Image (tube, rainbow, N blue to C red; front, side, top):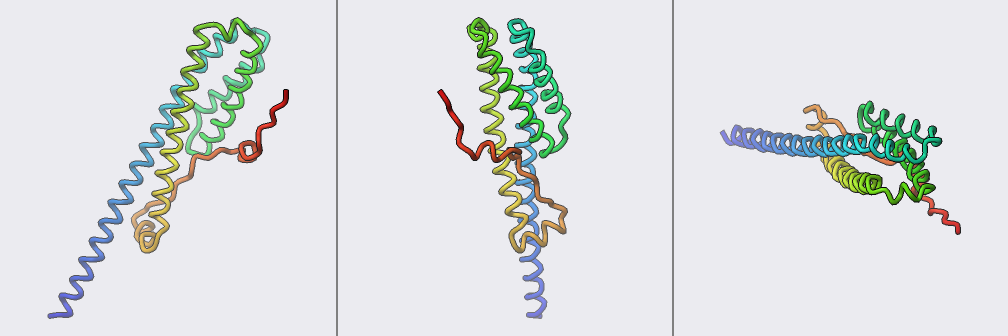
Length: 185
């Protein structure tokens, strides 16, 4: 009879452990999904701002057609991206295109003084800040989920229950952010 109680006790402990592990993994998975949703909302908001910004700049710099095409192409890539890696690549492309757009704007003092342009630029900066915060929240959730999936004995049950590691939302061109900025006067 004692052996039966010991076996029953072990089954209950293992069952509780699997139950707690499963619920913890589900909670982390939902947090990661929520964080990814936040990123896509902010990327959509930025993508919606860009045509207004481009049209405002076009009025002042009609001969800068290549820059506008690059921004439009990058915006389309963001809207069509599927998954974390593709979105990160499109994000990097769009950041480069926007830098070119703002470089064009620097050449036109009247444009920089335009209230509509200033408001759009401020909204874009605010959106960029929100995207960065969403990326940090997402990467934190991915870190927690991946850690829980990899830890022993969770890794045994996580694989059996179908939980997979997630990709981090990272900067593609790491070298460009690791080297110091070259400022020349």
